Image (cartoon, rainbow, N blue to C red; front, side):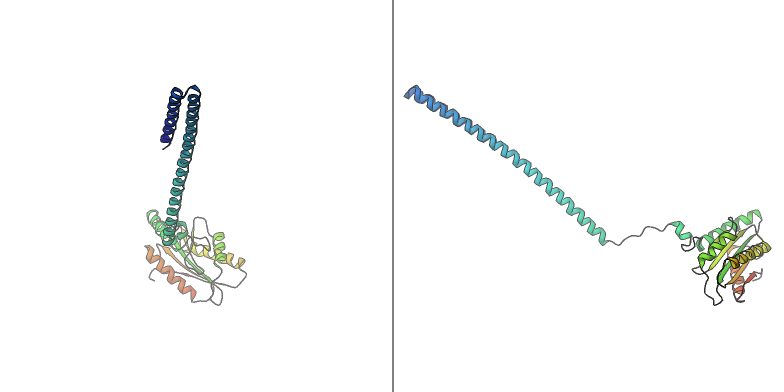
Length: 253
């Protein structure tokens, strides 16, 4: 279209020049000069109009490009919004739990029941290879009315009393704990628990009842399940006394 305007301008100019020449031939020099000048002016006007048309065309092309870019950006935004709507409609997937949180008790920070089971298996296996004793100590602490003691207080006292090598765990939501004493036989376990009892009494601000059941490898059992069952029975026997009591399992329990 722009080129057509340019060509038309030049054609008009040429026709005007031809007309001027003809007028010059037939009407004399003055008329021809006027006609020729008019042709040149017409040609210039046509050129200016053509350039203006070219400028307008360029502006149109730029404007069209901006419109197209705006449409593409809008389409992308709408697609993003639709993807967010779909994502919000999906059920939220919780991240997998931290293995450390599964093994540790959140309230006391002590290892939990799962850690106790795994650690007991490992320590009994090592005890069989090295022919060394292992003791399981189950501890339950309550006030005289039977309400569980503050588990955080008990956990702090357990940490302060037992060795770093001993596995101290919290078994349940109440104040029931377990300790695995490596390379410790029956008498050593009783002495260690009595030391814990004295520390508990010195730290406590309220009356409490300490019930303890002890089972030792190999004296009271040769496998994990049997040893744990005998420790549970010993703890149940200690609980019946309703006062501080340490019970030791028997081999035929």
